[in-house]
Length: 69
Image 1 (cartoon, rainbow, N blue to C red):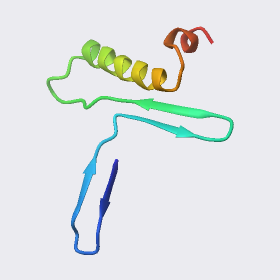
Image 2 (image 1 turned 90 degrees about the vertical axis):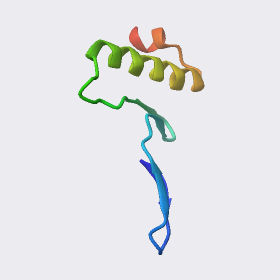
Image 3 (image 1 turned 120 degrees about the horizontal axis):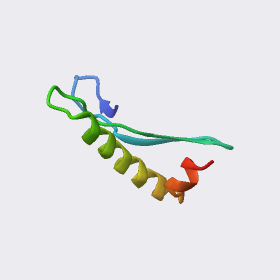
Image 4 (image 1 turned 120 degrees about the vertical axis):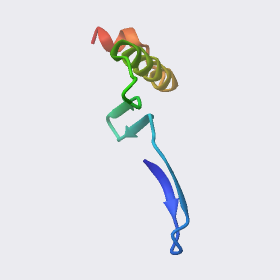
């Protein structure tokens, strides 16, 4: 989650479904989905894969490079 709050209790928070943790010699990429009762496992897998492709592309990485490494 990413957000803010002040001393009066005002604030705004959102769930991050794509993010990256970048270090000096490594990068961890994360992608996820919101699972609810009506979720279909295959659809959620495909959606998460599409989100991961987006963040990989932003980092200049091809999905096939990751899968064959």
